[in-house]
Length: 255
Ligand code: ADP
Image (cartoon, rainbow, N blue to C red; front, side, top):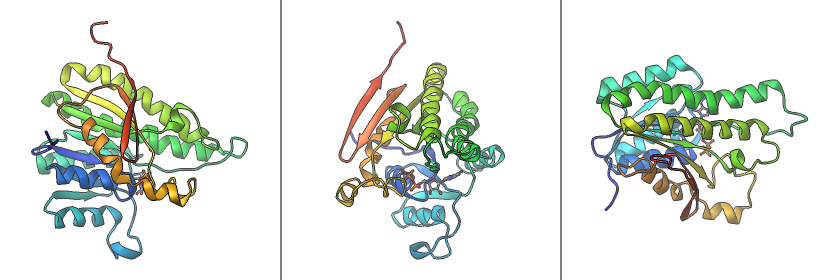
């Protein structure tokens, strides 16, 4: 049966571009009310004076969906809390969280500065913690929550020049492991997805022929599955163009 999110409220962070945008559009097309978060300002081109988040909201509305834009910086806890409060006031709850906002500051370890380390850890790891923290109490109260954290093979296996990013992504897997266990009794399921897709993050790393096959939209079905009623929990899922694979499922209940 097709996955539906009618009556559910979702926050997708970093949804002005790439993966987050694709996920926001996908969730909205399946009935979710979506907070399209991105801290990016107005850009040139298609969006005109609209911010990337506002542009995506326009796209969703044109397709008949329901969405609001939010410009919170995920590395600012007050802004994240305000975003969750706004969504809850407007739509009654936050049921689904896709923590996807991200930046890169790639440098070989010899050149990596303290600021490069701190910034990347702040956005990916601490920002994800802030988002999870802000939605957690409500999810516990309502006995329902689905959380997907966008991680990376870099956090599992390491990529050259990504000591900061890899450490942050590995940290997110650590966070997911604990939240998945602590969320069990309240029907909160927490998973990570490790995508391979053509986004601004990968466009310089991969050849054009590969990028052409790797649309962000190819990852969205895997994210939708992990946010669905029947989602597993504590899964590290790898997803590429047109296919996805579970890297690890670790169920500890009853063991
Ligand atoms: P990918 O699609 O691979 O995640 P992108 O760079 O296309 O990579 O998208 C990441 C998005 O995350 C960007 O739109 C960017 O503006 C957003 N982003 C980065 N840092 C933050 C932050 N601190 N708060 C909110 N959004 C952020």
